[in-house]
Length: 421
Ligand code: GDP
Ligand code: IMO
Ligand code: MG
Image (cartoon, rainbow, N blue to C red; front, side, top):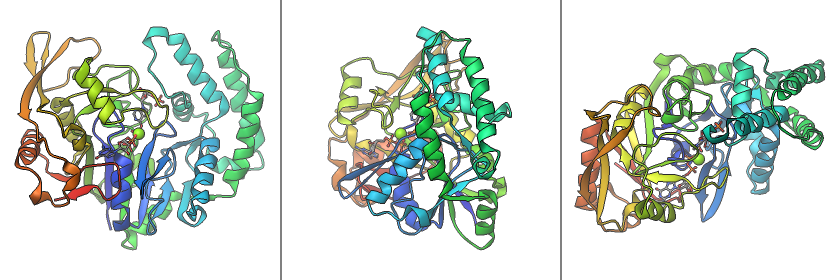
């Protein structure tokens, strides 16, 4: 049948995990297509929180098979911890999780290189999660990577040594102290654990599933504004987070894609460095952070908060071909008298609804439209038509600007707090 894609439209942490978990019973397969343990996707079921970094967000539902696609980079240590945590919760991970042999491994030395590179950047640091993402994707495109399928080869230890030696050589370029021994031991033991998992040719699995009428949901990580090509470069991650990434990251042809579900918060957040035109460095930003519990699911860092940015969202809808939007965390603004939305940028004195080439270089002054707050507890609503008039007005305003329907409104972290149109 077809593939739907679900991905973030802002700078990550839009609530992708929550929506995937909700939608998962409608699909046969949930397949993560890029990123790695820099992601943190939070699921809240019966008051219990689960944060997933590498395992797809369909794992807590009974129906779908979950696939870690070839476009993902895997830290075996994080993966082992994640799986053990799920097993402890009684989830039958072994039956329901497949891993692409073509996914690349994050080595301990990739993580050290990430840390060394960030330290060398000083004030210009990216604010990386330090999970080794960038050095691993560099090795992948540089044709030096270590792939999951390599652990099935009798030559594996030699391949590992070769890559490690190269990294140790590179590390000499930095003035950076590190110790490898313990990390390496844990990593090698985690590799043995991964060997016991279902390692597959996932591109075949997925295409056979499609041919036999199965429904697939491709799960994105990070968000469009962190995309390596179209995000706020260089303050981005190292993979294609946009919908085209699902084609490379899983091995699916573009004509198989049907719905592209974009996830956006009713406001905006960013964690790490880089431009963020609508950032609120005031009490309002602080209040959003507090009510929205805006602290990173992976690193615990406070997230930067600001108003929703419509030029950036429009750009994201264009790049991804978004067919519907799920708006999350609107409940965080329940008590606000007014809610603001940036509709245009003033870039060096010129008004524009388009993003400039270099968002870092230009002075961008966001132009805001003020809307009436809904002053109602949105968590109490389960039907779209019953939603308060003021809130529906806000949704209409967003839909008109973005020219994309809002098909779902999330009103709380829990699985059941979702109003579907
Ligand atoms: P992801 O990376 O896109 O999956 O998002 P994260 O899990 O990193 O961050 C989203 C955070 O918001 C998590 O703590 C979720 O539990 C929470 N969340 C998701 N949807 C909603 C919502 O509609 N309202 C509220 N208040 N919290 C939400
Ligand atoms: P999910 O999937 C938010 C950010 C980092 C940093 C930049 C580069 O949970 O939405 P990296 O570790 O990739 O080298 O970091 O990207 N970043 C995220 N921000 N959500 C994420 O994932 C992120 N993954 C990476 O903070 O600014
Ligand atoms: Mg997250």
